[in-house]
Image (tube, rainbow, N blue to C red; front, top):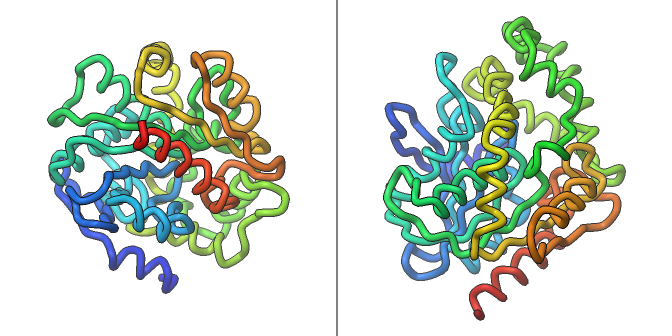
Length: 304
């Protein structure tokens, strides 16, 4: 395993979620002495996506960052019904495990859908574990509005057709890597493409604990975005939780077109578009800018 990836894993711990081991990291000031920040990573990688902004965040917040079930260093059961609802349950269970009563949210990609579900539960009194108050939400690129979401062809084929099950036995092979890498590259901006070393780390995350065998099953969350679209959007339109969208505009899945839809749907929308060449992973591609706009949002909330 890559040395930096091994250090990330070694700094974490596990909790039991309904019989499955879930990896998470907690860092920064001790719980109860600073604002709590919950980071919700995207698909298909894990909490390591936050590494470039981690050192600054842990100076200001008690930061909690789990790996969702089926991804990263968490359990990857084959016989499992992966869903946004279940991912939300897991995050609520972790907050309850840590006795967190309020926190800020910073989600990305699939994490946006999970945070939408968490917000809907917050707004409509449907929380599954305890009662957590969300102080702010800062969305990063993700499929917030399914009508504006444009997933890549391979993503649709793997998650919405039998192709995922057919290719599952080949996951981790050189052929699998050649299939996955063009889609990953397409999601980054022209000047921020992942290096060979970064791609190798991505594959190590995907392949940990034979994870690629469930990758397509985890990816079926797209269906949840259709099922829960109106409930999630109603919560976003009605909430008093301060929200900001920070968006990499050249992202083919959820770039400037998603930011435009956000401004159309959300009253008094707070939208920050990053530089024109930033794609789907702004925390990896433009970490300093993400920190600037995220901290400005949270500082305004805390000052209010």
